[in-house]
Length: 132
Image (cartoon, rainbow, N blue to C red; front, side, top):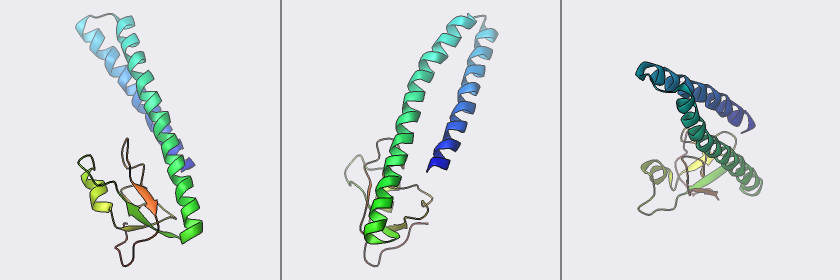
C-alpha cells in the first residue's frame, strides 16, 4: 500500500500542476488577474490535498486491517458491504464475495473503493466467488 500511496501522490502532484496551468491559461485568455486565478487554485488545492491525505490514511488503515485478518483467517477474506440506499453498485456487487489478502482485487480493498466506503473485510464466505 505504501507503493500505491506513492504512485497516488505522484499523480496528485501532476494533476495539481495541470489544474494550475489550466487556471492560468483561462485567466490569460479572458484577461483576468493571474494572482486571483492562482489564489483560487490554491484554495481549491488545499481542499484536494486534505482529501488526498485522508484517502492515503484510509488505504493504509484498510491494508493494516486486512493484514491482521489474514493472520487470523488466512489469505482469503470475505467482503462485507453495508447494504442500504447509500451503497454503491460496485460495493453491492462485491458484497458476499471473497478476495485475496495478498493483492487487492480490481475494485480495490474493502473500505477504500471510494470516498466514505463503509465496506469491511472479514472471515471468508463459504463457497463464494473470488473477486479478481
